[in-house]
Image (cartoon, rainbow, N blue to C red; front, side, top):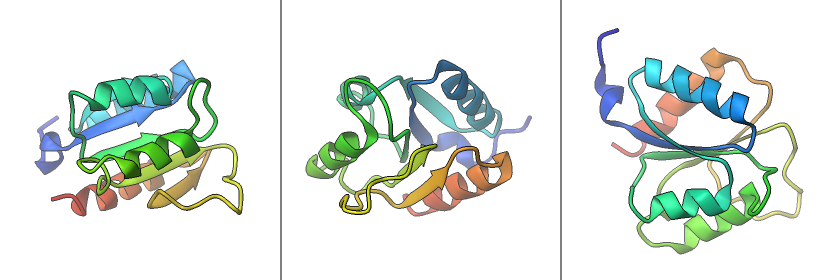
Length: 126
């Protein structure tokens, strides 16, 4: 596949389900995105000490640090505060939760909708 303008876009994908992490990673890479993966929020924050992604995609329900806490912490780090966050989860965020993300997609979601949402969020960082 020919690489397109998305090839320069770096995505951090965070999910505790290895099969989902692997599947979305492969799908995004096939579309030309560079993808780093983490299995929970603590690992994601560790990776973010060395990378600056154009988009962060995170699950909501994870061990060690869930998506809500990850989103809160990301918004407190100046260099990451403006990075768009896509929450992709089977659970719904609590209604009283402060919205620290741009878009919420409930699992399962079609590949077409997922990729369209990723592309739209990546446009905002260019």
